[in-house]
Length: 344
Image 1 (spheres, rainbow, N blue to C red):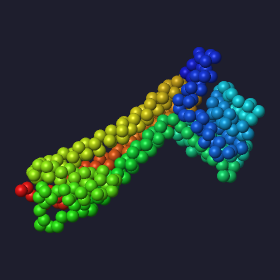
Image 2: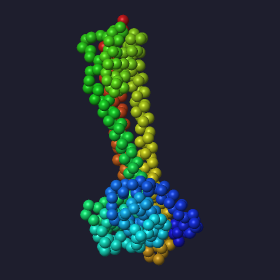
Image 3: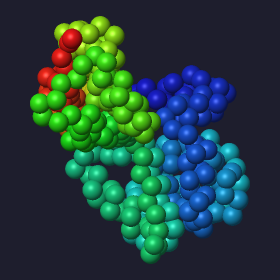
């Protein structure tokens, strides 16, 4: 016996609110309904409608829409709450239904269904679902672990993109001579005020970059201590602190790199658990439930690992750029300032 039906029977009258809470834990039904409302469909087909949670949210948000829900098992729409006159629930394979109703819907929705489909059958499944669309229609697909991995991957890419943009600005300023000093000129401690004023006159966004801050720090320390070594140590400390800060900011990306394979592993455990739950059917030669669940297990791991491999490569490249920025800033200060300093 599958675990799901037994749990539902045990819940009794508590099943509807718990089922809705369970569904909301995986995605925002209201947000989905609002997004669908912007498409203004007249007829909606949901593939894998289950017990009707998505149908209830869609029909509550879209008072004029006509809805058809498909599922291949159980009692589709059993917990549906809404206008039954605008909703129809059909127990049917998607291919059989769309063969009879091709091009009849403005919108086709498949939420948390694809992981139940055997990997080799997913492409035919999606093609059959798309056949139900009218010209110019929209197909909405959502799934669990794979979607979570993709969302985390996009989040990590956004963080890395933001950091890369900042590093690009830092590196561009290395091509400029912020403290113009002719060859052979020496800077004495009493000369530092003029150069400090030049740096302080930079636009505010540029003053916050590493190179201007390091130059300013070195000049101020040299003017105060009249010691070239103190100026060099002060600038080196600032650059090292900035490098440590940039490294610490990668911690969120590293957490995401850990989380993505973990989510994939959760999908693997869930798929294997479902496969074991269907093992009794495999004894009677129906192995579809086992292969379907194992497909979920291995597909979740595959997606997670592929995303992790890509992100790991990109984060190492970002770390390399950060380290180069520190080294190049040190060289810039030596070349553009420190070698010109001369104590009295």
